[in-house]
Length: 203
Image (tube, rainbow, N blue to C red):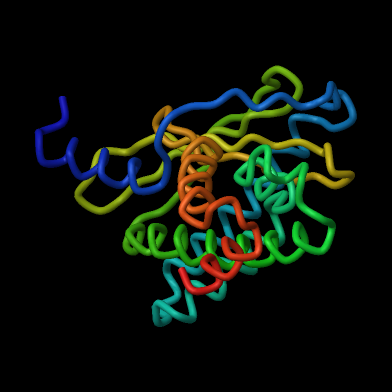
């Protein structure tokens, strides 16, 4: 059984990455790719993340590396549209493009700082399986002084190439967290997508 301090620390980490859960429905495309391909994608993403974690670089340099990893392996447009919610349907193409670019930088800085907490630890892919209309790749994070915990990557080729579109950490969901936070920012901006984009650039 985990002690109270360890449990609290792990929950803080998970809460920092994601809050709440959400259903994310994709067209039936899983048959177009294999479980081996999905696992190979995350194996490589995890290898790149582990290399950054152990690099000894400054925070700024590490965050730049994490942004490159995020843009390479994540389906950024899908994640950005999900985070923007209904406003994505009303936004112009130019607005959506600008928002997606700003969102990529924002989420890379945010999650890059979180992943810095893995310094001295590692992530290991342990399994992969079909789930609904996509694949779930299961990995275990091992931090120094902490009990191992679960990370699950949702992978699809919906956009035409193999990417991950969500990350579940001990049952909490990145898409839900980002949609709630971006929604709150958009409300504060009184529904102005351009103002939201400007906020993300400085967040």
